Image (cartoon, rainbow, N blue to C red; front, side):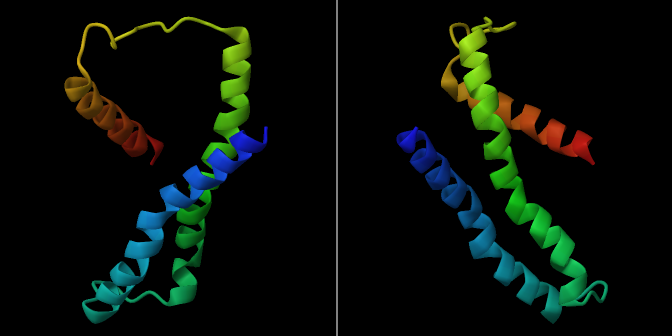
Length: 104
């Protein structure tokens, strides 16, 4: 369990790094060239959502993965044997992008 917690924390830190690195740059660019005027306090809910999303995802995914492995269902569609990783990775990015768009 300790190894799982450590890998979860590492995944959380790695998942947040692009956000932590890019967010100050993006906020600075918006202040230099604003389309609309937002105070930093107005941005807080969005920043909070973006920073907590990886944590919530991991907190949901780890127990769900444990239940999934205990139950052991087979995949409905298994593309790993038919499609190479070179094709599968962009396909997964497209599916993720669609789901992210659909969320809004």
